[in-house]
Structure formats: C-alpha cells, structure tokens
Image (spheres, rainbow, N blue to C red):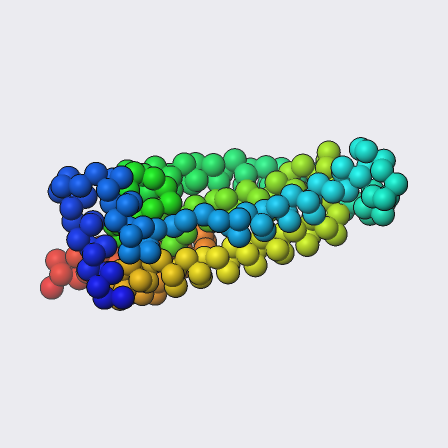
Length: 224
C-alpha cells in the first residue's frame, strides 16, 4: 500500500509541475489498480430505483392486466410546501454537482471528474468528502416527490428511496476503502476525521468552526 501511495504522490507532483499529461496520469493510476472503473454494479441501484418509482405510472398508462396490482397501489399525497421544497432542493443541488465536477476536472490532476491523483480538501471537499454523491443522491431522492403530482408516489417509491440511501452509504465506504485510503493513507484518514462523508449540514458547521479558529488564535495573539 505504501508503494502505491508514493506512486500516487509522485503522479500528483508531476501533474502540478506539468511533467505529465492528465491522460498519462490516468493510465498510470489504472496500472496500479487505483483508477475508478465503472461496471454494471454501479448502476443496478438506479435501475431498481427507476423501476420502483415509475412502475405504478407505467401500469396505469398501459393498463396491462398483469400490472394491475401496481396500478392500484394507493398514491401518497404531499402538501404543496413539501413538493416545492423538493423542487428547490433539486435546483440547489445542480450548482453543487457542477462545482464538484469543475473541481475534479481542474484540480484533481486527471482532467476528469472520476479520477484524481491529487487529494482535494478545499472547495466542496472542505464541506463533505463526497460532494458529487451528496448532490446526485439528493436529486435522486427528491425527484419522486417533486413529480408526485404527475407520477404516483407509492410505497414502491419509499422503497426506492431506502435502496438509494443504503446504496450511496455503502458505495461511499467502498470507494474510501478501495481507492481513497490506498491512495493517500494517513492523510486521508485524518481528512475523514475532519470532514463528514455525506452530512452537508454538519460539514458546513465544521467548516464554519475551522474558519473561526484561526481568527480566535489571531485575536488572542494580538491581545497578549
């Protein structure tokens, strides 16, 4: 593991100095088995989510006999304020998603959003360890509520939300154990202690405290 960490650190330094291209950094990362490679397993939870959320509407629209049970599932009605808040959350997560992608592409060293050779701890990563996961998961969770006026929100939709929550939490842990810690070791473990994985509110609160701490140190120094 230490050998891979030194290789990643070396790749990061070379990218900072412009000695290698982002494509070369990605190739080297894959060679040591620390490049993110998407497989069908990365999408299965979202396929399940799609089926569970939209099956009742599909059953009603097609009126197929063997889907009659799903067409008859009672829809859960939300107050207008809940629907509006869900729409606001969807819209609010779009800038966070764009910020995450920009940061990875511009500062991660590999020129793409899903590979990095530089440990990012500023920008959106100063708030949560997986800003892209927070944004995308929040959108996925709130879309069924936002569309509940047109697409029936049923017990299947609740199940879909639980599936996505569990999947996101599980995959976040897998990514850290198989990619992040092997890449950066103790530095990433320390980062984990300072920044939450997904808790956006806690992340913002911790960031506020970290920003206040230097100010307090400066004030106490000037008084003394």
